[in-house]
Image (cartoon, rainbow, N blue to C red; front, side):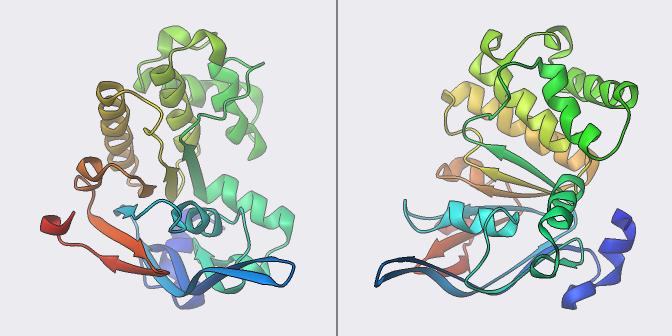
Length: 245
């Protein structure tokens, strides 16, 4: 399925231009007889090119929600649609292929593979999508140059600064030009100045590629720079006005 078809088809009740949708999403963790509900009946719609911040208290379930949206965890009830595809109807293999094609992920800790260079780390999503080594390397190098790491492509993560590792992680998330990038506190492990630099870079690249962004963050100053700010509170999402952020 092409990205354009997915965005225009409205499969699963999605509106035209909608890249992600959660319907009546619920998640409950069970341990023996004890059940801990995180949220129940949560709805979310993300449009093409839209940037959305999700804020909330520690333990509110922000990371859990992001994992459900990205197909890294399964909901107790409800549905998630990504690029017009109903995640629950896909096999594990098909879900992995959809994640690779339509989603990018950036975490607080970069999760780069330490034995590979920056170039090789960024190449991997492209190669998983079926591209040959030369094409993957060209695309990865072009994006690493855009994030200011053109001179560091042969360096391994242990040879990069914290900010450089996060920039490489941003490049990896965007290398397949996904419909949506999911960020879980991607600047939370950086000093204030470096965090601001990486955040602005993410926004710049997202706008250039017209990619949506759903960002979990505790930093409300950064959240205010996005199109919408949603607060996860007592299992529900509510939209905040700028004066409330």
